[in-house]
Length: 115
Length: 112
Image (tube, rainbow over the protein chains, first blue to last red):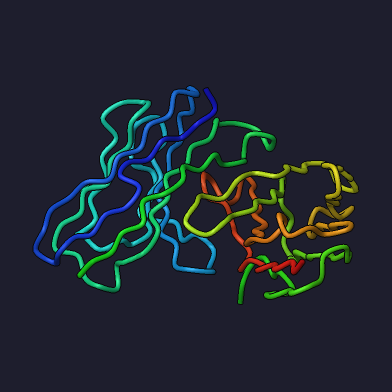
């Protein structure tokens, strides 16, 4: 299994809603990532979990709350989002250690629209 | 200033033409990856290069890592409409920890 699975594929939410994005991988990767991507731009790093601990938070607003329940799962909890938060949210994972393991495996993303 | 300068930003060519995308930096990377992304989907890894001077071929795609591990190029021979997409280079290394440094991307459109 070389897949990173993200659900849902599409999400429309109001600014007062609470929703969660989910990500799952069964490749035994111990580093997992959340990225935000606007159209035709590169992904922007939001959070990194390493061995189930939050290791990087790129000064992301608190309305985004990540969670790593175990080594295979990664969640992103959303609350009180703004329309400018509309974007493609990507989950990624990778093995740890060594230059050959610096590559990321991405999920297909959640296209989020905030109304 | 981007740590990884990727060029060109946009490329629109006819089917059958050749093209090269460049990724340049003043910094050294321990690895450099190329990804291709279609609209509404996640980036898909094409190749990882780790050795200075390394050349890798994937069908019509040729990837090169500079001798000093500061730059890379992606060359596509006889481009096809199916090559259309966003191409991203990304570099990694110990000094970046768990982060990857992404270039700004190249939007390629191949017309039939």
